[in-house]
Image 1 (cartoon, each protein chain N blue to C red):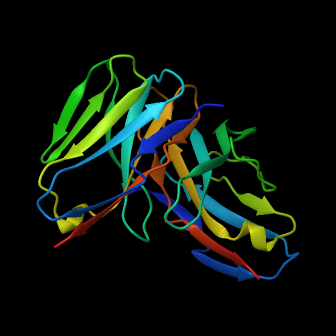
Image 2 (cartoon, each protein chain N blue to C red):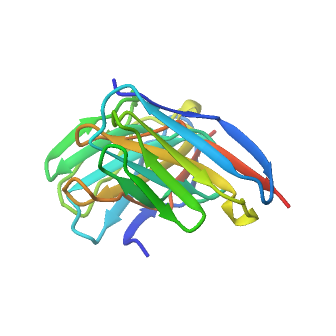
Length: 113
Length: 109
C-alpha cells in the first residue's frame, strides 16, 4: 500500500472560491507530481517538483499554483475556481533515480458549480 | 514538448481473446513504465523497461521496449474480466513523467 494521501476525496465548490488540494507522502520521495484527468481520459501533467523549494509547470497550462516547503507536502491551490476546473486531480511521488515507479494518491474529484 | 501516443484508444474484447496496446513517443526515452487504472481508481505501476529491445513477462502480460527506445507494447493473452481498465505507458526523458493517452480495455464475459 502506497503512503501517499490526498484530501479531500471529493469537493463541490462555487465559482470564484479559493481552494487548496492537499497531497502528502511519508515515503521521503523527492519527486512529486500533479496530474489532471477527466473521467476515462489521459493524464495531463500540470506541476512537478524535484524537491523542497523546487517547482515547475507541466505540459498542460493550468491556472493552479503549487508549493513545496516540506518534502512530504505538495499542495495545489486554485485562487478562483471556475467550472472549467472541474476534473480529477491526481498527486504522485517517486524516489530520485532512473528505475523508480510512481505512486499515486486516491485523487480529488473537484466539481465547480 | 514530449508526446506519448497510444493506440487504440478503446478496445472491446470477448473474454479469452488477446489484447495489445501500442505506445509511441516523439522522443527517445530513458525508460518506459506501464500502469493500470481500474475504473474509478488511480494508476498502479505494473512494470518498467529500460534496455533497448527488452521483453518482460508477468503471467499473461508481455511487455516490449522498441530497439530505438521510442515505442513499446503491452500484450495480454486470453483476457479475463479482471483485466478491465485503462492501460497507460509513461515515458521519462528528463525528470518529467509523461503519460501516454491510454487504452481503455473492456472485456465481455
